[in-house]
Image (tube, rainbow, N blue to C red; front, side):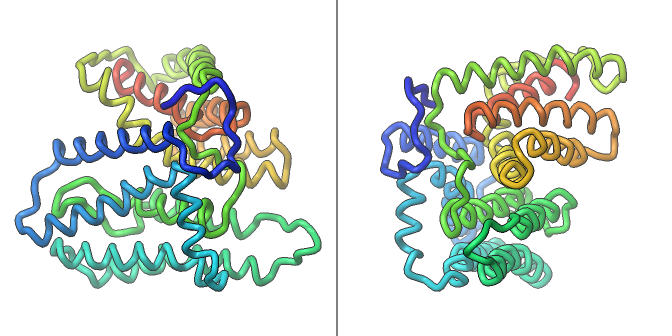
Length: 336
């Protein structure tokens, strides 16, 4: 994360050295983590396919944080028909998925059908929204909300077949495939303002995130201990203290904040106002942690903290700091 004295405008999409530097470091960390935690593919073809898929999916997720990358991609697809522009990214993802699955020896039949529907239905829904919209008056973002749910629920309910990278027992890429699809749709093909996906953070952004974490701890710890959901079980090894928060930030924090704050809260706020958007998005975030009602309650309160940081900073990468601190402390000392 880069601390800057001023607030960068989200509309400033020129190449920025700080964004490029942070994205490069994140990519190196992600590459090192994958190579450390997984086994080398058995064949050269599988290795090359795994490398290419890694660059496209985890690499694409990180690269899209750079305003210049988003601007360059828009320049590539801007001349296409609106429907073709929306479909271009998902089709590339689907082709890359099919090529990787074939090279890795994964069963293609059910996977191709499931991922084809998952990747292509959301852009078609957005395309129908454009066709049906009345340009003379504001339109409720119903289809955008439906698209956000269509991208999230199959992951949440594990409806998609596993996608290990590398095969057969590597890191599951289902969540990141959905994330890159969503980022292409809402950051490139049909940009949604206010998402705040940038690592150009100010010191105020970081202090706001830490303050929200401390406030959440004051509220959540008594509830968690009283209900028996958490207990004092510290495991303070180096991996949990040093590595885990960063991994949580990149793998859980930013992806979930993109969905629940950058899309869901953002869209609800446009229609219902900031307070209603914050509360509803937080409740949905809590319900995503069913079936344990204790977890639902604590997650909904956490959603209020994350959403407040997002409102104050206009950066999902700031609310993801609070998210990573909560999950990191839970995992390190509270038996998470």
